[in-house]
Length: 382
Image (cartoon, rainbow, N blue to C red):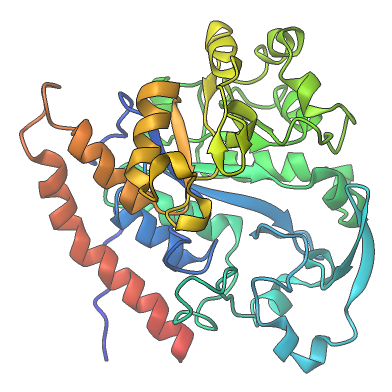
């Protein structure tokens, strides 16, 4: 079967712009509720179904190439157990204070990593794409966004910087964070939040490590997001509890370096016996400090939906957008979030846009993006 190549829309000045009036639809590792996470297919699917931003975790290979992968080990989401040639590569390292055993990305070159194929992390999700897609590089991830038929933002994370800087070395004494920013600059990402330059190529830089964000502030004015874990856990770099991170004094400090925070949902609204408890004032205090709030992670499956939402993800979206008033949502299912937003706050209504413009553009782009998705499937099978 021959597949028609996808037109390169990178330099198209007539692309539909990024929407900025409603909560951002952030495709968490792509549309990974449907397709194995952090793959080209998952990101293209996310764009196809309406994501504003495609999100990824950035790590580094043994030879210093930046790659898209969430875990520092490869075991949970690749077929490495089938590769007998790598059976002697299992190691135990300290990762954020825990002894972790597995096949670590930092012990494999990019060439070796490219021989692996990804698989779905969760057994209760669709398994038909297991073994079909390779790990992709940061550059490949960026290209997917830039080649999209409309303006699509990227949302990369500086992942486990303490661990990566300990195990990977670059020439000239460069750090992981330096290489990360170097890559963004290479592809023209620049400008502060909502500037003309930023709107052309939108990006949020995220990290759980505060020192990484303060460090890169000397290199770029691109907007940054401080991720926040459970209040009882500690940062990997400063050994502060995330309870302290959410204090008024810390928010007042960090607002000089970041434009927002990305908290775990339960840090905003605690949960007991799968029922929501009274909401904290974190969102209010963040907004008072002119910080956006992008909580994670929204998933459609019943096991992730609190009883308050009657097993309906749209009820959950409604609660967080209309009642908690967050500014963006990390979701494994960007298609369902886009459907909810189009039903409740459509792009074309009352905003001086041509009626149906989004749907027209989507229909025009759908065939090309589907074509590109099929291309990756065929390449993976060959």
